[in-house]
Image 1 (cartoon, rainbow, N blue to C red):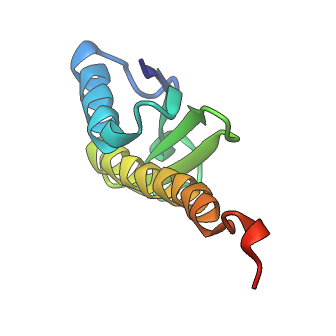
Image 2 (cartoon, rainbow, N blue to C red):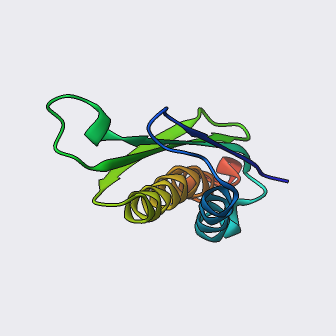
Length: 117
C-alpha cells in the first residue's frame, strides 16, 4: 500500500482537511501505479513568506518507486489546491513515462534470437 506523508513549511498550517485533500489528489493521480509506488512525500510551501518571491504557492512531490530511482516534481500556483493538482498531474505523467519506457524496452527486445535468418 502506498504511504503518503504531507509536510509544510512554517507559513502553512497543516490541518486535517488539507492533509486529506492532498492524499485524495495524489491517490487519484497515482491510482494505476499503486503496485509500483511505495511512498509519496508532499512538501507544501508559500513563496509569499520568502522575500522577493512572486507570491505563489509551491507543491513538491517525491515518489519512491519499486525498482526505480525516486521521481520528484513540483508545481507553482496562485493557491495550494492548484499547485497540488498541477504537481500530481506532472508526477502521474512522469511515472507513466518512466514505467512506459521500461515496458517498451521489454517489448522491443528480440525474442528467441536463435531463429536468425
